[in-house]
Length: 316
Image 1 (tube, rainbow, N blue to C red):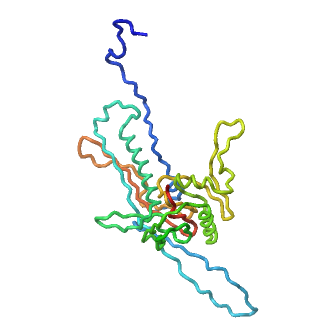
Image 2 (image 1 turned 60 degrees about the horizontal axis):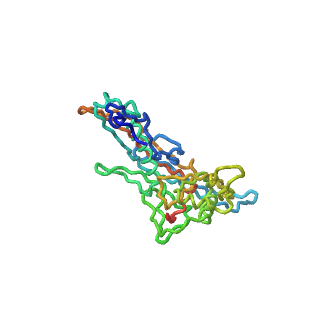
């Protein structure tokens, strides 16, 4: 087939309008399962403090009639604290933007502000999982909150050679050790340890690599890929894992270190906000508009013995 002579086709034409969809597609993840699950409370100082306590171990308790009563030896509560961290993002858009007809959004500033707000939530999630000690800050050093690993000491399994637990008060980070494979035995041991300490974990946060290992846990009724008669889909999932020590829900996460598996009792963690997330217009200094999204908060570990970690897991 050949085109007839002197055919005026689309390659010769000028003025053809562009065909640009009025939608912006973004595949970047924005889920923050740990941060989203935490209760939000109010902070009133850059150092937010709280107290913890424990019951003594059970003992043989019997007395004779008429015996004089002696007071039990008591211990005081433990006072803990974490510093608030400032999360800040801003965008500047030239005022020329007001006259432009754009695809996918009516106002560039509104679109970009929403985008940096989502990015900031990812930064917060990353900080909550980070193996960082708290930093008080100064005129030249930013304050930093202590992430979850710096609080957890009681229920740690799979610790590799040279691994060391932190003090457990947020003042230092844990020391990573030699990595070995994540196993069901390590996971079950961590669950048992939490139960022995009185905890009731409900959520597991882990990387996609460790999630693939968890899919093969023995006894998981959903562990094998299966196709039902007449179905056109393969099902391989592990949503809820039931053990004698409690039932937990597995949630793959992207912002935690791939070497660590977090087994958390979510109600024993919370966030204290000194300044909740706020979108603010900044001072105008020229032919542009500036807006800032700011959040200042910290992580509260109400009692670390209610949660556990399987640490130093191989990531490949």
